[in-house]
Image 1 (cartoon, rainbow, N blue to C red):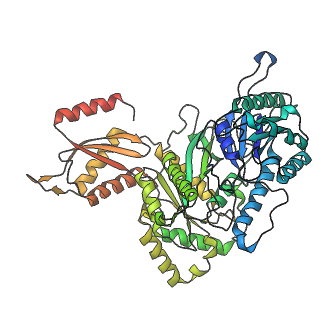
Image 2: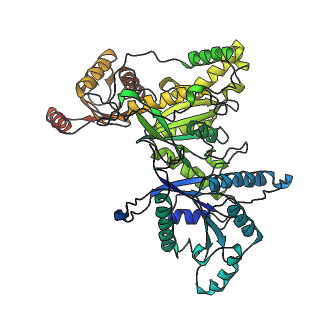
Image 3: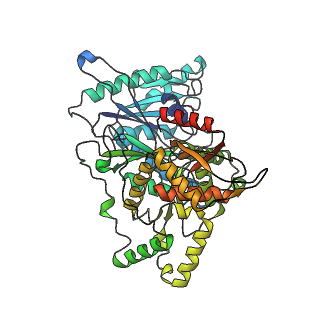
Length: 552
C-alpha cells in the first residue's frame, strides 16, 4: 500500500521538553513519558495521524503525518567515563537514533529551552541539521510569559528567519495551535508538490494493511524484547543495549502477515476448519530444534522470515501492531519513579492488546516474575505465546541427555501454561524461527475470532460432563448437570453455562471443562472463561431465546 507521508522529528539536547511537545502535538497527554530527569526518552517514539484537509479545488489532499520523539541529542557524541558508563552509553545510542530520525524527516523541529538561553549544544545541533539539508523550525519551549520576549533575539544567530522561530509552552499549550497550523501548511505544500505519485510508507511506522491484532512483547529486563521487535519489523525501530532497563516507553510498530485465502473483504477472519493435529510437547519441540541445529548454521538468518515488498492483489495480507514494553521486575525491586511509570505502561499494554508474547531469556532461566506475568495476561483474557529467546546459547549444553532432561523438567515446573500454548525456541538476534512465531500469531488471531455454534458447544459440554460426572455437596447433594451453554464472546472465549448448581464447583473440575473444550475446539494459546448460572427451565428458555436474537 503506497501513501504520501510527511515525517516530522523532534530534536534537541536532553530535558528541553521534547516529549511534552510530542504529547501536545499528538493531543495525547500520556503518549510519551515526560520527566525532569535527562535521558528518560531513549528510543525513537513514533506517532502517526492525518493532517487536516486542504483546498480540494487544487486537488490537494491530507497526507499521512508521522511525528518522531527522540532522546537527547549530542552531535559530537559523549565520551564514555567509567564512573557514568551506562548513562554515557545511553546518550550515544540516543544520538544515533536521533540521527536516524533526522535522516527520515521532511521537517525537523529543533527544541530549545528559552529560559536557559542559547547554548553551544543548540548551535551544534542546528549546524548538524543544516548539514543534512533539512528544513527546520526552532521551538523555544517553556515560554510562559511576555517577560521572556527579549530572550528570543539570541536564537536568530542559529541562521533562521522569523517565520522559523516558534515560542511555545508545552506545559500550558501556548503557541501550540499556531505551530500545528504551520506544520500542517508545510506538510500539505511539501507532499502535494512532490513529483512522485506517492511515497512508500516507512516500514513499521504506519500499517500498510488493515490492523488485525495488537500484540505486546513482555518479559523481564534484558530478555531481548527490543531485538525481537526490530527483527519482526525488519528495521531498527527500538534501541537495543545489553544494559537492563534500556526501554522506558512502550514502542509501537507494525509488520505484515499473509493470511491467504482464509481472509477476505467481507469476513476478514473467516475460520477455515482444519484437520485436528496433535499438539507438540515441549520435549518434541526441543528435540526438533536441536536436530535442525545439527543440519544448518544457527547464525544464518532464515530467508523465509523476510517480508516480501510486492504483495498479491486482494486482501490476503493484514498488519499486526507490535508493542515493545519495558522489562518488568518484581514490585519490591522498583524504586525509581520513572521505572514505576514504565512498569505501569507495560502492564497497561497487556490490558490493551489481544495477544501477549512472553519472552524468556533461557540463559538466565525462568523466574517467579515470568510466571506472574503469564498469570496476569491469562487473568486479563489474553492469548499467550511463550518464546524461549537466546536458545542458540544453550543448544550445545542440551546435547547432554541428563542436562536436557533437567532443563525440561525445570521449564515444565515453572510454566504450567506450556500445555496450552505454543512454545517457540528462537534467537531474536539472529532472526531464527521468526516464521514459526508469525504462524503462531496468525493461528491465534483466527482462534480468537473463531465462531462456535451453540449446538456444537452444547454437544461438547454434554460429552465432557457425561464422561466425568461429579456430585456437589451442600443441602441435598446433586449430580452436576448442564442444561444449556452459550458463547457470550470469543475474544477470549467466554462461555455461560446454565446448570442445576452454580456454586461449589471445584477448581479442578473447572479446569477439566476448560481443557476439554480447548482440545475439542483447538483453542491453543487462549484462556477460556466459564460462567455458571442456575435457574428454572423458564429462565433457561429465556436465555436461549435471547442468545438466538444476539450475534455470537
